[in-house]
Image (cartoon, helix red, strand yellow):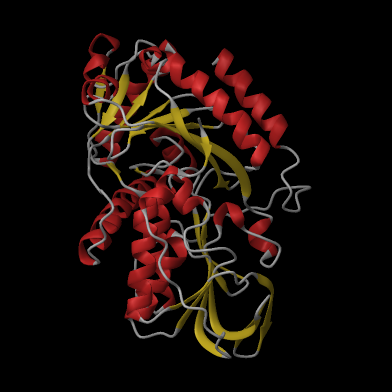
Length: 424
């Protein structure tokens, strides 16, 4: 029987966060105890800044524990589009930032001794249509010539070395990407941030933020705290308290199922190289083996943010998708199903910097494990006055017309992308 529960959370013990009175003042308030907020808090606290993390639910409650655990190179936009939009020099910087992001995750895991199954097994993008595969050679050549980054194009005749499916039309493999247990990683970040001196306050929802001389008054359901600086890392769960962020972020539902553990033979057949795998559709599937050999299979089964009904309905949609890709799993039970909310900006790019005096890092578009961790670190270093490279600083971060935080347009967007997948 399928449980409406997040598999990753069954692999961790929630850290014991003591219930403390909110301080009257702090150097920095960090809003959100996910990858972004906790990596920022860790950096700030290690530098000696008094740091107070406010989390509306519990540590890692949002996207940081609900994702596929894929630590990926690149961005949502491909190399050709990046160069066309931003020019060669900046496109190269943006792509390098994605590689640096993985190194930051790897370094934090090593330095903080976080047991989270981090491993660079690489990723594989598989072509949904022959026309998609035709673009891989051009993309690989461009990544090599423009970004100095090597990927391997895999023809359909050789794809069984990478994936136990006949559905696709070849693929493109990148050896630098990694897999991770995201729940173990975010809980490890929380422990390390606390050990460094940051205080984490769960069940503390920010209601309003007002600027005043010398800083900000941050009103919560547990009282008001005054801070010199604010860092926002709420991504798809951004709320009305920071309206200039909420109005620039589109929350999109992503749903995941996980099977019972597969036998070693079946697991090796499904994913011979244990890659992080996703396909080339707009309404994409993404899948991987977990450390205990479950197949984790996710996708945009529904565009709207998760709720009980959408998670239940999406579980069946994803099971059908899983069997389309891997018919050999028809007798394998699905044990877990859950949903989460991704954050997209209008341009499908991450954004990190400062607006209205408030620092932020949001808009990861499905690349949040690496980007969120690195951005939290980088923006925190900037807040400390350090000179660090952030090629995303200054990118236009546009609001969305006729949008007040409720994504009324998502059903239409979902239909549009389904049509594109059928005709592209």
